[in-house]
Amino acid sequence: MKDLFTKSLTASLLAVLLTACGGGGGDSKSSAPVAPAPEPVAISGNNEEEEVTADLTTTPDFTFSGSYELTVVVEKAEYKGVQYYVNVCSDYEASDPMTVKYDSCMLRTHVTEADQEFVLSLSESQASLLAQVWPMENGAEPIDIIWQKGQDTATWRISF
Image (cartoon, rainbow, N blue to C red):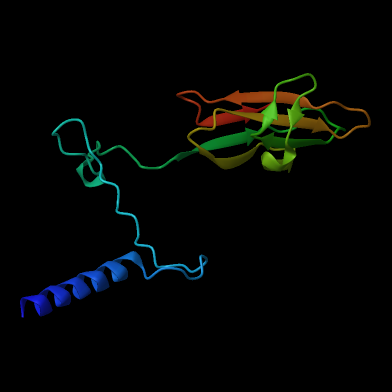
């Protein structure tokens, strides 16, 4: 009986071993399902709890807006007999002559005989704008006017 028990145990161990090894040869391109990698665990160097968005507090006058409004006033034309066109653009290089990417223009208008007022919505990161006033004459060069963001610059008056 002891001999039968030993043979039975040996056969069972052999079967388990073969099953654990995968059973040998076969197609090397076959794919077995791969278990997903475990989620990374954040380990902080101190025992303080990490701050979450729900823990943030602000003052009542704080807005979560990333933009502000700029009022642009294009003043009336002083020079009779010449028409003017104005572009206000955000993407330009200060050079001689000015290099402007005209697809960045936020305002395009002609100058009239009365002041015109426009409101532009700018991102907080927008620090400057370029206004180019074009006289509508052959060979005319634009008049370049640059606006810089400051603390009290809610209105920009474009006059030439």
